[in-house]
Length: 240
Image (cartoon, rainbow, N blue to C red; front, side):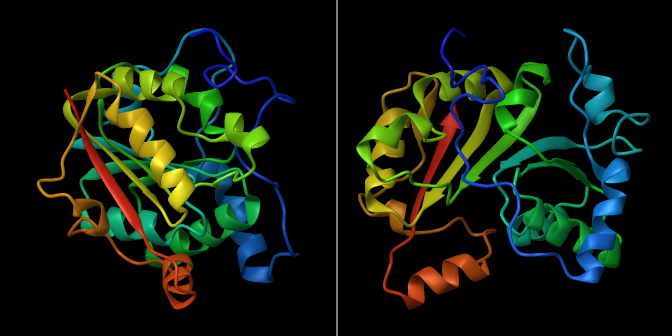
């Protein structure tokens, strides 16, 4: 791919705002020390991960997994934890550059002894090219930064080039699950993905975007958005 969205420079376009927030509580600071155990390193050479490294018995999860799912921008990790515990035989790769969120997730992973989550604590676009094609069963991009100003739309994570990348990672029949509470971003994501030849919208009725997936769990962020009168938009697509 040729544009910045596919191969970001370290100081180029970014889709997230900041790396650090308020000082971490002791428990979460301690949880960050487990990042070498649960973290996924960026390959140093041109060669990517093998299928065996990501899904096999001697791979990153320490056991064979039935499927590989990605959650990009997991926030504090509430949804990631939910799907990991709901589907214990699925390996979950979580991507989040905000270290407070990474610490929150790892704190729960440690406390609840969850062994099917691995974390990449940086820009997801750096790692995605190293994942083998066609081995991913599901990708989540939920409530990303809407970048509402027109001049910042190029920073939005869902771009045609990113959908191209997703199309190579997902196997036929795999799912792309998008969600937002921003109507402008909802229109943007729907238009970009609807027009992409590799994806088919799963909705069977006009207001299907109002209905979250059955296995979805409302996070504190979403509950706060609803309390403030905002609407959730849920767009689920299938890889052709």
